[in-house]
Structure formats: structure tokens, C-alpha cells
Image 1 (cartoon, one colour):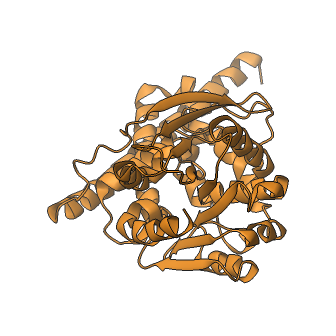
Image 2 (cartoon, one colour):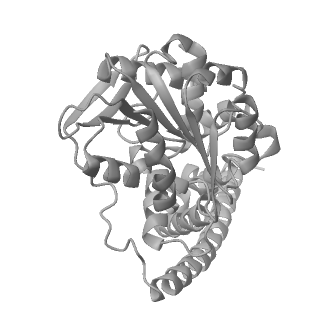
Length: 359
């Protein structure tokens, strides 16, 4: 076969493949968009309690960038109390594929109360923080990032750490690396929907990876020049709707969650690059910090989990309690992985008395 003939054959094959992918993308886009529209329509018919909630828009008193030891720039926001109270500073640590908006409702309530200093930051590779400069995407590196935030924002006084999912694991890594902080500086810990291990028994992270807007169509993006703009647009629409539906399925326990709340969570997911997700997933699967929990025995610990959490199931929280028998466990009925958003009232009802008791 001559080079010219071979070239024409390859071009024809690419054209056929491009057409096929375009057809598939169009079909997926239609199917996912229709299902998403039907879901939203049925839920909106009964009213969306958060339809007018300005998610992501919250005031702060100070905004700064903290540079970790490896050069990673971490975006931080601080909310000051109405007046000095002498109470511990509360530092919030979010999970994988999210950002500080994870704690929207807790921030709202605590800011209104005005009796605690609040610190929020975006983890490396998330939100407005830069990617890890070291390229070492593991939980140990996140523990060091938390240490940098604490050194910069809470140089003295007591601290309460609040972590969700990977944020809870970050706190465990911090305890493993800096045990001297606990009981002296860190005087309370809240762990939400998290785990100290057991990932070989669950499918943690896989749905989030699939749900990312571009991940179902990696081959498509790589061949964009051959496929044409219409196919790309249809595929992007399909993956966006798929992301929304999977966020609803795996992030929430209620069969009829607020569409606006699902959209808020999916928007945080979509801002996290696929590269960041895939690099973190490996460290999550190998995460095992049960020994580190012994460091937390010197401080009060509250463990919160949704009864329908598919990513870090109730069994993971119960296992934490086996290592921390004095900790308090609260199970939130009919809630999924983003329990602090989905069941904010119930989470706050458990969390606020705990904070008062240890402040």
C-alpha cells in the first residue's frame, strides 16, 4: 500500500470514528439532559428551599495567601468575632473535589453568632489554591499544608479543627506529624463523613472521578481537531449533565434533594481538575491512619456521618469510634456524603452544643 493510500485510509477511519463519537455524544447529551430536566422539574414542582440561596457568596474580614513549606499557595479567608471572647479559633478543612464552600451553612450560622474566630482555606489543587508544588499528592502533604495555615493564622490560643471527608484525613495526617499540638493547642476535633482507612471495602472516589465533566470523554478531547466543534459541544453537554446526576446520586441520601444544592456541589466538583482528582485518588485508597487516632484521645471528638453515605459509609465512622471510644458519634438519617450541606440543620444541631461544651 502506497503512503498516499495509507494516509487516505487513516483519514477515512478518523472521519468514521469522529462521526461515531459525535453520534454517541449527541445521544448521551440528549439522554442526560432530558433526565436532568425531568428531575429538576419534578423537584421544583414542590419548591426548592434553596432556589434563592446565594451559595458561594459569604463575607470575610481578612483574605490572605499562605505559602506552605513546599511553595504551594493556599487561599485563606478569616471571619473575626464581633468582639474578643477568648474562645478557640475554629479551622475548617474541606474534602476532595470541593472547596471552603463545603461549610457554607456552618459558616453562616457561626458568623451570625459572632463568638468564634473562623478560618477557612482551599486545599492544594482545589478552589483558589494552587496545585501542590512538590507534585506529591498524598495525605501527608495535606497535613503539612494544614500546619502552614495554622502557623500563619492561629499563632497562639486554642484551636478546634473541623474536617469533612479528605479534610478529616488531613487532620489525622496532621496529628500523625504534629502530635504535640493536641491537648495543648488543638482542644477539639469534628470529623464529618470521613475515614481512617478501610478503602479496600468501598468505592470511595470512583463516582466523583466519573462525574467530572471531561473524564467520560478523554479520547474525545484528545482528538478534538479531527471531530469538529459540534461533537465537542455535545459531549461537553452530556458530561455536564452526567456530572450533575451522579453528584445527586452519590453525594446525597435524600431521593429528592434541592436542585440548587446539587448544582452548588457539582459546581465545586467541576472546578477541580481531573489531574488533581486522579492524583489524590491513589493516596485515598492507600490511606491508613488508625494509629494516628491515638493522638486524638486527649481531646474531645465529635464524629458525624450520614446514614446513606456511599463514599465513606457509617462503618468507617464506627471504626473510628472503636479507636476513640470516648468520642461522640452522631448519625444523620437519610443523608449522603455532603451531610453538612444536605442536612445542615441537623449537623448544626449536633455541632453547636459540642462547640459550646469545649469552648
